[in-house]
Amino acid sequence: MSEAGGNPPAGWYPDSSQPGTQRYWDGAQWTEHTAPLADSGQAVAGQAASGPSAGSAGAPAENIDTWLWQSIVATLLCCLPLGVVGIVFSAQAQSAMNVGNYEEARNKAGTARTMTLIAVGVGLAAILIWVLFFFVGVGGALSGL
Image 1 (cartoon, rainbow, N blue to C red):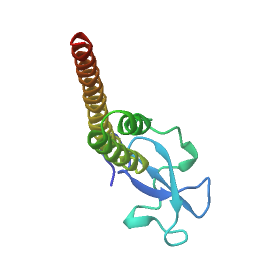
Image 2: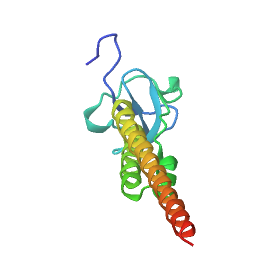
Image 3: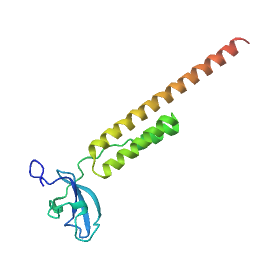
Image 4: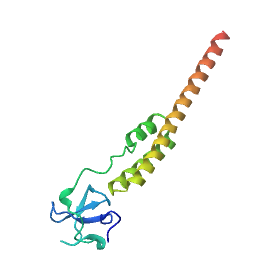
């Protein structure tokens, strides 16, 4: 059961460098994600125990910025509803990245980025409108004296 190019399908395989654990193979390379073996010595979910050697484990395929801290700041300082939406999508992006689903992680992180930037824009616009009304109101009141 090999994909084109001779690589085994993506999935969990026993990690030869850490007995009793399994490592996630994303179809092209090893990720940093590990988990205990479900049944000692057995591959999980029917994956072949003769999968690629985990000794060749490399760095994760991608490190995607999930926009979590930016979403939190936008929520606290700018626009609560849109910032919360950004936080939710950031958490979903992190979860997708943790299981090696980088395509979904990129999509969720992009949505989190969009919501966060909109929240900042709405917050800045609201502050600008408030400042203008304040100065127009104060200026109008002072000019009437």
